[in-house]
Amino acid sequence: MVSLCLEEVHGGRPQRCEWQVAVPIFSNRTNARMLRTVAAAIGPVKSNDLTRRLAIGGLDAVAAEWEIAVVYCLSLQGPISVQPSRDGVREPEVIYTTAQGTAVAVEVTALSDRGFHDRNPMRAFTRELIRITIKHAIHKIGAIHYVIGSKDSEDGPTLGVPTRQTMAAFFASDRFRAFIAAIKSAPATDRQLTFDTNGVHSRLQFIPGARFAGGTHAVFNLPVDLRRNAITARLKNKDSQLSDTGLKLPAVVFLCDADCYVLGRERTTNAAPSATEIIELFLNGRRTGLFPRERSRTRRINAVVTCSIKEDRSSRADSPRRRAITQSVRNRRDTYYSLTDRCLAEISGCIRHLPSIARMPVNALNENRFPAHYGGYRMSGSTKIEMSLLTLQQLLAGKISTEQFMRDHDRLVDQFRRATDSGKLISSMTIRECPDIDDDWVEIKLESAAPTHLFQAPDEAAE
Image 1: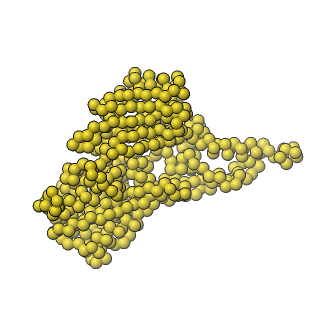
Image 2: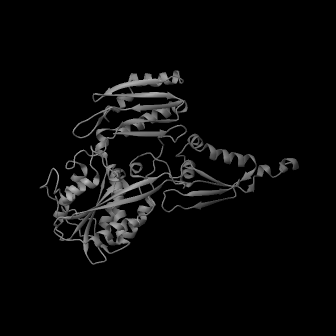
Image 3: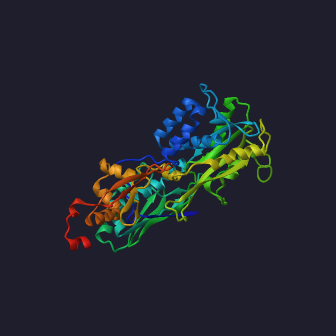
């Protein structure tokens, strides 16, 4: 299995910034609005805990976002409540009462591929490679491609990339520095750098004039065992948690996408099971095939609802459209407390109330990001310009240097320069709010005559 990763670095955004902006899945504004909606129902203790986790950032914040979002969605269609906190007991996220009057314990958990990426730090490798490419302006003369080898093991492919501990040493090595120096000294010449890591052969290749940087490597973030994997481990944990609560209620677990590749896969392969197959085995066991006597591993979880995010970049809209995809897997064996299909459909269907999704989970886990509208602008005739409000504020506050702003907004700067040279003065500024995005647009009108152009000669004014 091979994946192809292409990134356009020619004229792209810089990879580092002097300031940081929190970049959650649903935007900070949306999270705050959802949390305010459910605050009275979940109480101050849980609200404060979720707020603290959002402030931490990273994977913990993404998990808190999903908890808030699912509880918020449920609250829009039925009564919710929480169990009083008890020492040593992790209560479910919420108790939801269906339209049929059935109280159901709902637990929300987020799943990521962090373990896979810790083992094969491919993203860290490519990020550093792109950073060095931009630092040395190699993206202006070509692109560096990679071909990463791999070897199989019982845990899946092991890629031929440096570990996190040896990553800095690799990019600081004499061989890599000589590779970069050779590219800069003869930019029209193909170059290759071969290296061996983890007993695997890989190579970097500079291609003069190429617009895209990227390469190939084996897919490494898919489970290889139906029983020994992150999904099964998480569901076992949830089964134990529900057991500890002592609640005599049916239970539904939402398994949400915190950058988990297998959750979003619609198909499986011979080498890797799908999320549905793993959940199906955990809930229902197998009655045929190689394991005819294998039973369900839980009688407490009535169903698991997977929730992944899909991104559609084919739309003509200003930004890609993102939507949540859900799939329910029911426990068909004997459970302690029954749950009707109608109740399950009501609970899983709550995801239709999800607010606008600002970005994919993988981007929510990245650091050093820019405002949502950074680098963009809009023109209306020759007298109205829209730009990112947060970018303007960071520029005026000195958080973004003038040089960096001009480099990343060359066309916007050109529009302002033309208006200024023609004697137009800013006449008004209007804020256009974006409630589901952590940035707004500021509309700048240039309709007044600049003082420097009030006394032009008649022929100049005519021009």
